[in-house]
Length: 123
Image 1 (cartoon, one colour):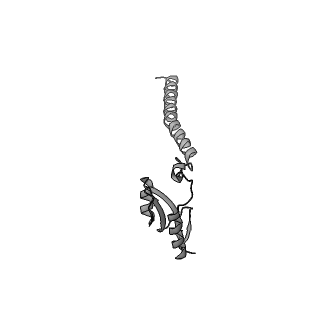
Image 2 (cartoon, rainbow, N blue to C red):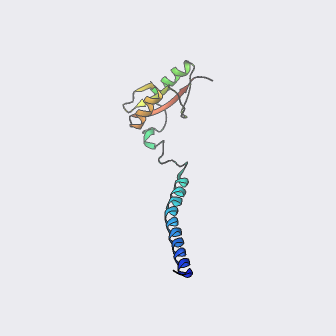
Image 3 (cartoon, rainbow, N blue to C red):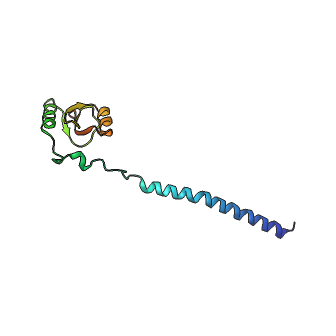
């Protein structure tokens, strides 16, 4: 094998290595770019029009009464989500109940009803 044969063989291995490297790295870079483009985006709307029912997003009289009772006990109720174990939940059958966060999460995930108010202790 002469020197030119060695150079030709070496450059051939270099080209194969570069092509293999690019073939392996480019899909990974593309995947990272696609994932980075989706970070921070929601996959579905959290509040849907169907959750507001026919009369809009207004609270029913039972929900208003329950919230008033809780506020009379010193809690601060709001519609903005918060981590609390005092949640006013309206079931699909129009029953209103005060449940904890885990129960509200499970029930709303199963489309069993709607979280109406989150009630927090003062402070």
